[in-house]
Structure formats: C-alpha cells, structure tokens
Image (cartoon, rainbow, N blue to C red; front, top):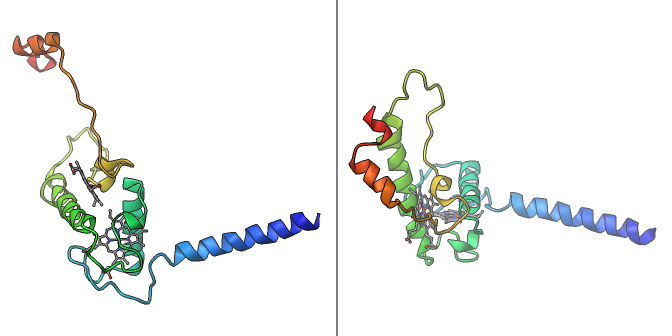
Length: 149
Ligand code: HEC
Ligand code: HEC
C-alpha cells in the first residue's frame, strides 16, 4: 500500500519532469543565431514546431541533424542537406503547386508538399520500384489505354 503510494508519487514526478523537458526543447530566452534559410525573425513556437515536424516526418531525434549542446553549430553535414530540402520544398510549393487551379468540380483544398509527403517516417525515403508488364507496355504502344477515348 505504502509502496504503491510512493510509486504513484514517483511516476507523477517523472511525468512532470518529462513535461518540463519537452517544453524546454528550445529555450525561449536564446534567439537563434545561425538561421540561413528559415526567417530570422521566426517565433520561438514556430521554430520548435518545425523542428518537431522534422523529427516526426523523418522518424529521427534532434541529434540526427544537430550536435549535442549546440544547435547553432553546422558541424553535422545533415543540417546543410536539410537546408537544401527546406528550400526545395518551399520552391515546389511557391513556384508550382500554389499556381495550379483545381477543376471546377474538384472542391478539395489545394495540397502543398511537406517533408512528410516524401519522407513518411524515413530519413531516406524508399520508393518501391514499379514494373510494367510486357502486356501493359504493348497495350500502351497500340493506344489501347484509357486516354484513347
Ligand atoms: C532533419 C534535420 C533536423 C532535425 C531532426 C532537427 N533540426 Fe533543428 N535545425 C535544422 C536546420 C537545418 C536548422 C537551421 C535552419 C536554417 O539555417 O535556417 C536548425 C535550427 C535549429 C535551431 C536554431 C539554432 C540557431 O541558434 O541557429 C534550434 C534551436 C533547433 N534547430 C532545435 C532543434 C530541436 C530541439 C530539434 C528536435 C526537436 C531539432 N532542432 C531537430 C535541422 C534539424
Ligand atoms: C520531393 C521529395 C522530398 C521532400 C519534399 C523532402 N525530401 Fe528530404 N529527401 C528526399 C530524398 C529522395 C532523399 C534521399 C536523397 C539521397 O541521399 O539519395 C532525402 C534526404 C533527406 C535527408 C538526408 C538523410 C540522410 O540520412 O542522408 C534529410 C535530413 C532530409 N531529406 C530532410 C528533409 C526535410 C527536413 C524536408 C522538409 C523540409 C525534406 N527532406 C523534404 C526527398 C524529399
């Protein structure tokens, strides 16, 4: 009984600690020093949200791209790879996707590309190879496909 009570207190204390640790993933008192592609005046909350979004999209932890204890350091080359990815994703949206219009009968919201569009929980996205059978290839050549009508 006493043990149970103690365990509860202990678990409660651990949970409080976890909350504090996750809230303090990025200190609000230290503004970013080395942003090269994200807006320099990005809010603390947006920066934290983005970083967590990268974690989840690639299924990695912060340390996959950052050296421990110094988030501004560029010693990990994956930070520069990620900068290219950020610019690439942004350009796909601003140059292409945002300029398309849906058909009048298509009322779905315009989809934009995110890291997760490609990564889906993998640091290096794997796309299964597709094979086109001989029959499919032949049908295509003979113009028997749906685009014929
Ligand atoms: C997929 C790689 C990647 C992951 C994962 C990632 N980051 Fe980042 N982070 C970056 C890149 C790239 C920048 C710099 C962006 C720029 O140059 O505009 C950055 C910048 C930052 C900065 C600003 C540093 C400064 O002073 O300039 C902080 C703080 C930060 N990240 C914290 C985190 C935290 C906390 C996590 C985990 C929740 C995390 N990051 C996960 C790639 C990543
Ligand atoms: C259009 C698809 C696409 C989008 C969008 C995309 N990526 Fe990638 N990313 C890739 C591919 C493909 C690779 C693997 C390239 C290679 O090394 O062969 C990759 C590689 C990476 C790597 C290197 C992983 C490693 O271990 O070498 C990081 C980090 C990364 N992407 C982060 C991001 C982040 C963060 C975003 C969103 C800002 C993003 N990517 C958006 C397709 C994409």
